[in-house]
Amino acid sequence: MFGLLEVGLLALPRLCTLGRSLHITSMRRRSKLDACNMYDKMKFEFTKENKARVESLLTWYPEAERQGALLPLLDIAQRQHGWLPISAVVAVAEVLKIDPMQAYETAKYYTMFHMKPRGMYVVAVCTSTPCFLRGSDDLLKACSKMLRLEPGETSKDMQFSLKVDCCLGACVNGPVVTINDDLYEDLTEVSLESILSDLKCGKVPPAGPYSGRCSSEPKDGATTLLIDPPPAGYKMQDLDDSGEK
Ligand code: FES
Image (cartoon, rainbow, N blue to C red):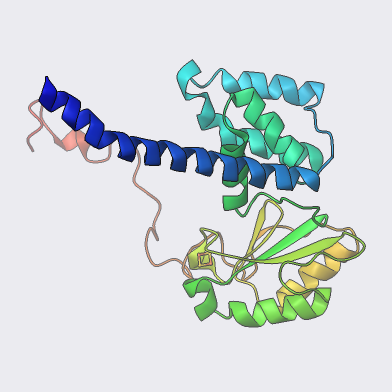
């Protein structure tokens, strides 16, 4: 009995320290969010259509796992508002009944979320290794010159935002640029210039590879699957009932 009491007394200071540090962490997180709130007095409420969309999406998740819907809900909020003000992040956290700071940190982490007003077209140039080896740095310089923007900036007329991104998942078609939701692949300075000129005139050019190849097939043409596949059941008639020839 005395031994247990002794152990408890020894652990007490450590528990107090742990409690104090948890309290300080939560205070810091709260004050960080309050600081953001100071700059963001914007009201946000899901529209009727988006409320219905959110409710239907939440039915996919078990009650205890609703926070798994955080990314799609942030995406719905961003598509509604154009970017993600803090009030939208808090509204999403309220729907999911999670700490607003958790929603905020998630939104800050993913580059697809914009925490400040953005241009109508967000041009993101991938500069990760495969795209870099195919000339993404030159594309970025050309883009910057054509739009008169540095990465991270938005034009005054709110038409373009320029940013640098990490791998966009289409390395085999590098260099790659995303414009809003679309991937533009196999780009050169010339093709990128024509894409941006079209956008400036309000015309959205087709997405996909600009080298003439289909999807991500080899650039000099297909090297496999050169003949039509045999019909279903091919050679099956040569087998007996036991599956032997
Ligand atoms: S490195 Fe550019 S898409 Fe993967």
